[in-house]
Image 1 (cartoon, rainbow, N blue to C red):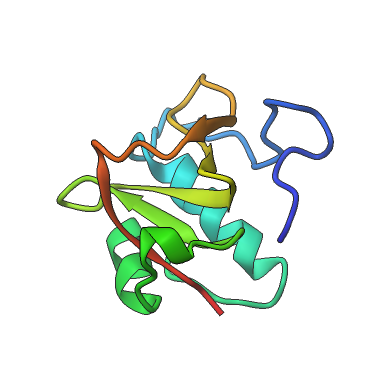
Image 2: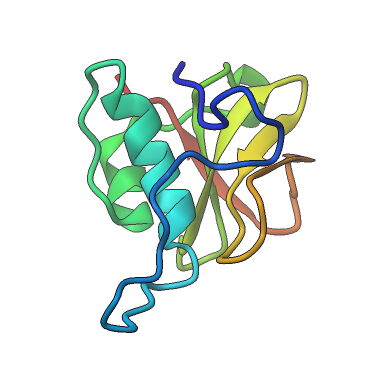
Length: 116
């Protein structure tokens, strides 16, 4: 799986989200872009939208998660995180908040998928 931090804990190497014109993408755009960029770096194409990523990947049970699997949050699937093992995920919560490791939040859990 691709490294999203460039070796610096808590720092995303994804491009800044603010543009000169003042456009601010949806709050979860960084997370969707992180999942898409990580898999693209190993030759797997994913849609950019979290809901479309869910439908583009086969379902995986929580007990069968492997590093690199995508975990989708909320009933409307507007957030995606990347599973890294032992119940932990990499999350890019929103603008201004560094990419972080956190335990899977089962209160927000919707489903999981395995790209590839």
